[in-house]
Amino acid sequence: MTKPKPRVFAKARPGALPVPAKHDVQAFTPGGVLDRWSEDAAGIRSLERGDNVITMFDIIGEDWWSGGGITAKGVAAQLRAIGDRPVEVQINSPGGDMFEGIAIYNVLREHSQPITIKVMGMAASAASVIAMAGDTIEIGAASFIMIHNCWVLAMGNRHDMQETAEFLAPFDAAMADVYAARTGQKVADCVKWMDAETYMSGSQAIERGFADSLLAADKLTTEPETKAADQKINDLRAMELQLVSAGLTRTQARDRINRIKGTPGAAHDETPTPGAGEPDWHGSVAALIASLKA
Image 1 (cartoon, rainbow, N blue to C red):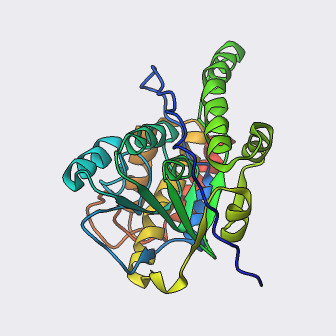
Image 2 (image 1 turned 180 degrees about the horizontal axis):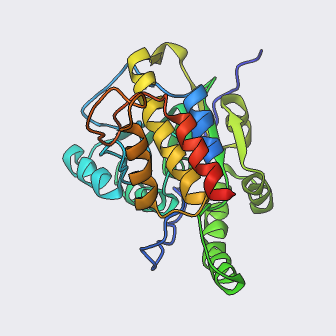
């Protein structure tokens, strides 16, 4: 297989993205993306770190289950600590809150020095938007960039649904413009790939302009303990999303999952805490989802 040639990228960083005025709206990563990240990218990390490196090995936005998550506020603080120097951003994320990803993208693109993005594992959904802030984007041969339209969970009548669709349309259009500006592709093609929820391998991302060169394989490692921890937390996120899709609020979904985890045989710890417990409570949650949909 011929190794893709590095692209020479001389354009300025794409323009800023709009931030929603409605701060009570969150755009999620679809459950299928969470599942694929668990299978293909969980636990992948870089072998190299430095004092000018920002790592994004987590969900985008605050994460209730881990107490972590990547936020614009946190990235801004890291940039201030790094100062007026080139920055490297290492990404392996299934995405998360698209609007928080937009805010992070805007923070990064304002940095005065060159930004190198390294996609190790996956930059999906909101994380793919963040990657577009790089002056140079490197990607692992077995890594993926995944793009799609804003994905939210909404409830209401047809008027409410129409209002939600109208609210989301400008953000989808703005993201397509950023992808097109960074890649040199036609906006219409970017829209088509977003509509199809497209995964691009390392070589395909380079071919389409979403990355510039391949990241050397010897720069990456998969940590078994980290992979297991990533998968466990990601299972909780996916289950929460399923319950919200079935009609519960996020608070109700989290309470239900923690109660199930705390039942005999469902988890080893007596007192359920966010992120704790073994993933053998899936059957109980699946039964709950089925009952809600009945």
